[in-house]
Amino acid sequence: MNWRQMAAALGVITLVLSLAWAQSSPETQKCMNHMKLALRAVQMYVQDWEEVFPPATSQAKLLEAIGPYLKDNKNALTCPATGKPYRTNPHITWRPKSNYPNLGEVVVLYDSAPHKDKRYVVGFANGTVKAVTEKDLAAIKQKARLK
Image (cartoon, rainbow, N blue to C red):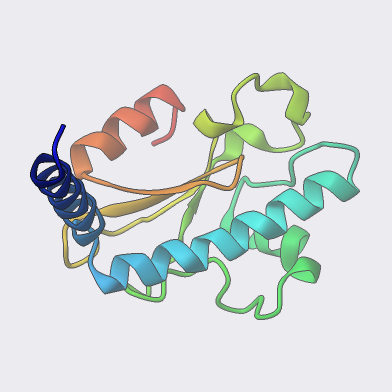
């Protein structure tokens, strides 16, 4: 491979990565970062409470449990872009972390309303956050048995 082919390949890689990043609007990125903070609080709770997930049957119960781990617990479970509360996964309530072989598939929080770019943000038990389409969210919710 000569230097021109190498330069062209690097240009294509840069373009693909730029487009992948550009799929999410700045509002969605802000929501993703906000949700990551809430997920960190959930992870700290799990660590402190013998590897058991907090009560997540409602937003209020989850917020009460993870509130001590948050700087701003008033708006911690509300999307800053839409102003709507995040939805919780009630199926993780009081369940041991060891029940789940792949924490990257365990939904903890997800958007209740779409962003301007028609994406929803979903947060997983391993701390990852994804911006997904409505179709992808429906599949994730079905797999997780969420309404």
